[in-house]
Amino acid sequence: MPDTEAKQVGAVPDRLTPSLATPGQHAPAGDWMYEIKYHGHRLLTRVVNGEVRMFHRSGDDWTERLPTQAAAVASLNLENTWLDGELVAMGEDGVPDFIALQSALESGNTGGLLYYLFDLPFYRCTDLRELGLEQRREQLRQIVNAGHHPILKFSAAFASRQAEDILECAGMLHIDNLIAKRAGSPYRSERSPDWIKLDCEAAPDKPDK
Image (cartoon, rainbow, N blue to C red):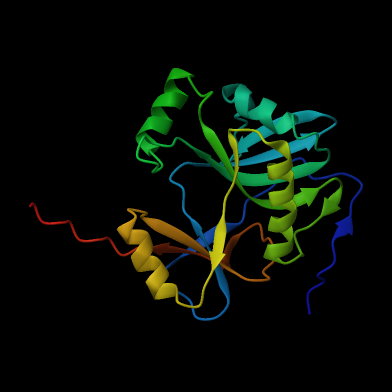
C-alpha cells in the first residue's frame, strides 16, 4: 500500500516532470473528478528563496516571457513550492483560444494571459505527491483564493458518476476535452492512467430559423 503521508524535504527538486494524461475513448467507471482541458501551454512553477521560475512542459524556462504571471505567483508569498497549471488565452466567448495564445507569446504581449492552476506537488518544503488529489487541490484552492490575483485562476473540478452525461453537456458548451482524474490519486511524473483525456460529444449545429 502506498504511503499517503505528506513528507518534509530539505529542498524541493530543481526540476519537476509533469503528470500527463492518458488518452481515453470512454468515460471511466467509478469515482472520478473532471476538469476542463484548457487549450494552452502546460506550465510548472517553482518558488525557491523568493525566486519564481516558470517552466514549460518541455523543460524550457519561460520566466522571462511571462513577467506578469511570475509577479503574480510571487505575490502569493510561497516558498519551496511547485505549482502545476496551464497558461491560457481566453477568447471573448469565454472559451480558451490557442491561436490568441500563440499570438501573444510571439508578440511578447503576454500580460493578459491567465494561469489556471490545478495541482500542488510541493508546498513549503512538503512533498504532497503521495497525498490524494482532493487534498492537494484543496490546499491549492485556498492559496489561490487568498491571493485574489486576477490572472491566477483555480481550475475548478466536479465529481460525478454520470460521466457520459458530463461529456455530452461539455460538448454542448463547445468544450472539446475534459480531463478525468481518479479520486484519491497521487501525483505521478509520468503518463498516468489516473489522469485520462476525454473527447467531448460535440453538440449538433442548430438549424437556421
